[in-house]
Image (cartoon, rainbow, N blue to C red; front, side, top):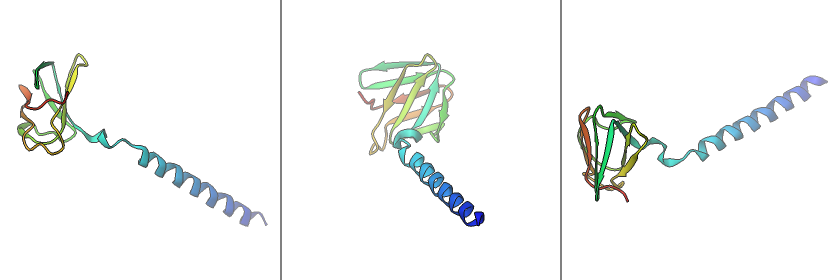
Length: 107
């Protein structure tokens, strides 16, 4: 009868959807959760950089204190810089909303 065929089609569709969904999760970039700061202005000077004015921490970045590891500072004018390395114990200092200072900018 038709019920066995319908069940087979439903199981095949379910398996295809599960495979497609898992492919989407596997393809997600590893750096998607990089901690960020958004500030009015960004200034880069040699191996350091500063974001200043109305700085907002995003993606789990600390609002005040030392910042370890990697993070990004974005200016509202779309300028940005990357700071620190995964192993960095002290890669920046956050004093939001006033500023965020990068002590070892990635070049």
